[in-house]
Amino acid sequence: MDKIILKSELFYGLDEATIKHIFSCIDHKILNFSRDEYLYDFSEGFKAGIVLKGRIDLCTIDDGREIIDRIYRVSDSFSINFSSLADRFMICKKDSKVLVLDVYKVFEKHKRACTSRPLFMENIINLYDEQISYLTYKLDIYAKPKIRERINKYIYKYGKNALFSNNLSREDLAKFLACNRSALSRELSLMKKEGLI
Image (cartoon, rainbow, N blue to C red; front, side):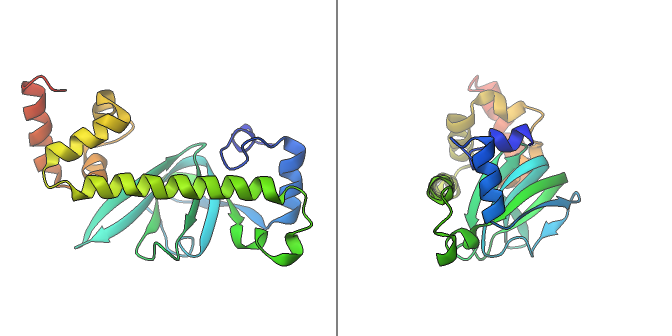
C-alpha cells in the first residue's frame, strides 16, 4: 500500500489491515486529472480523499477572478462537503492523482457492522472540522481591507519565507490573498524596504 495513504490524516491511527478493511467496506477509486482541469463533477457532494501526486486547489470565482481558498499538495487529505460550499470547485494545478472515497456510503445503515467505521468516521469529522477552521481563517483574510493586513495574516500562519518560496507563484499568492497581483508586488516591495520582510 502507498506510504502516503498509510501516513495520511484521513487514516490517522489506523494500520494497513484496518485501511484495507475500510476499502472493502467503502467505495473508493484513484482518479487522474490533467493540469488546468476544472473538476466540476468532482466538486459535488461530500468528498474525502488524499492527493497522491500533483496539486489541487479549492477555488471560487468572484467577479470573474479566481480566488484560491485552499491548496492541497502531495500527501494532503481533505474532507469537504460541497453541498454547503456550492460556489466552490476544485481545479488541478499540476497533473494529479487523487484517492477519492465515497463518504456518504460510510453513513449508510448497512455499513454499521463495519468494525473500522467509527475510527474512520472520526478522522473524516476531524478533517471536516479542520477544513471549516481553515475557511474561517480565509474569511478573516478576505475581511481585511488592506493588502498589508492580508499579507500579515499569511505570514502569521506560514512564516515570512513562504512569501518567497518556490511553492507558490506571485500570481497564486495574489489569488490566495484575493488581491491584484501588481498591487501585491508593490506592497511586498514596500514591506521589504521597510525591513518588515
